[in-house]
Image 1 (cartoon, rainbow, N blue to C red):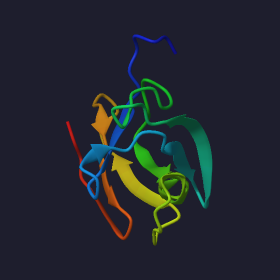
Image 2 (cartoon, rainbow, N blue to C red; image 1 turned 45 degrees about the vertical axis):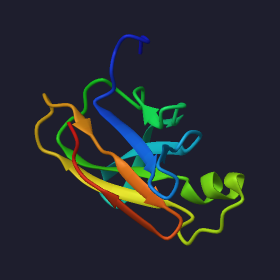
Image 3 (tube, helix red, strand yellow; image 1 turned 180 degrees about the horizontal axis):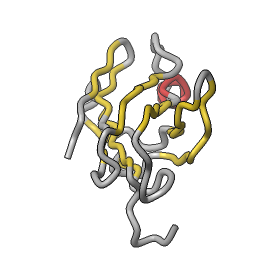
Image 4 (spheres, helix red, strand yellow; image 1 turned 180 degrees about the vertical axis):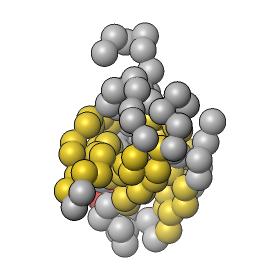
Amino acid sequence: MSETSTSAVTTHVLDSSRGLPAAGVAVTLEQASGQTWNHLGDSVTNEDGRVRQLGPSRLSEGTYRLTFETGAYFRELGVDSFYPQVQITFRIADAEQHYHVPLLLSPFAYSTYRGS
């Protein structure tokens, strides 16, 4: 994948407890295949908390998940946290669309939504 292409799935992590982008969070993208998950890509959030290159530029309809290594992120900051990982499972219903899945994060809570 070239630097100018964009993944079908992107994400942005905001550390809402600090009011800052969460840089350095490892993220993995997987696709469901029956009872197993197939690895499609992984990356780390940049200084702005974003991942623009995470897997293929086009994905088929199906069920996918993003796994965020939130425990490691907070450990690096010296902050105790409750969730060692956050996994967001979502469905791609239209292979022609781009899917942006942001994560709002704090040591003891998180939320997500379908972004644009």
